[in-house]
Image (tube, rainbow, N blue to C red; front, side):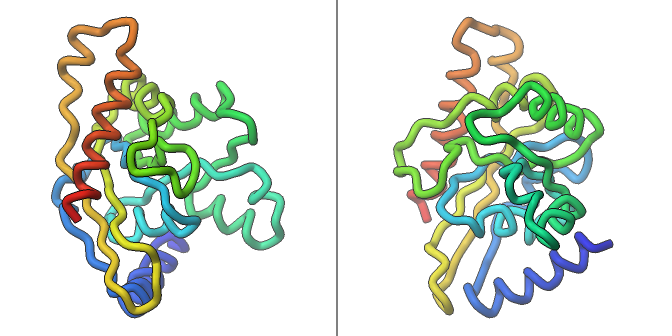
Length: 192
C-alpha cells in the first residue's frame, strides 16, 4: 500500500519537475522474475527506474541508509534491502535471487557507481543474479540530467535473449552477459 502511494506521488512530482516520460513499458513482463538493468547517473535513479513500472521494484541499498531514522524503515517498506560497503555479500546475493525466484522485479545498476562514463564496464553481479534466478533481463536507459523543468526520459528495452548464454555456457559467460547488458543500455542512451 505505501509503495503504491509513494509511486503515485512520485509520478506526479516527476511529471511536473522533470517533464518525465517513459517508453517501452510494454517490454516488462506482467509476471515472473525480472531484472531491470539501468545506467546510474544520480541518487534519484532508483525511484526513476520504478516510478512508471506497474510492478513493485526491489533494490539493494547501502546498509548505512537503514540506520537513518524514518528513512531506514521507509526504504525497507518500499522494497529495498541492505548491502554492505566493500562488495556484495553471499547473503545479499541469496536475498536477490530469492526475491526473483518468488517472481519479483529487481532494479540493478550494473555500473555499481553513479556518474560512470558512458563506456564504463559493468560489474558481473547483475549477470550472475539474472542467470541463477532465470529472470528476464530488461535493459534500461535514463536519459537526461534531472534539471528542473527540463525533459527527462527513461527507456525500457526489449528483453535480452539469454538463450545462447544458457545453452552454451563458457568460462566467461558472466563477462559476456554483462557486456550484452551494457551494450544495450549504452545503445539506448545514445539514441536518446
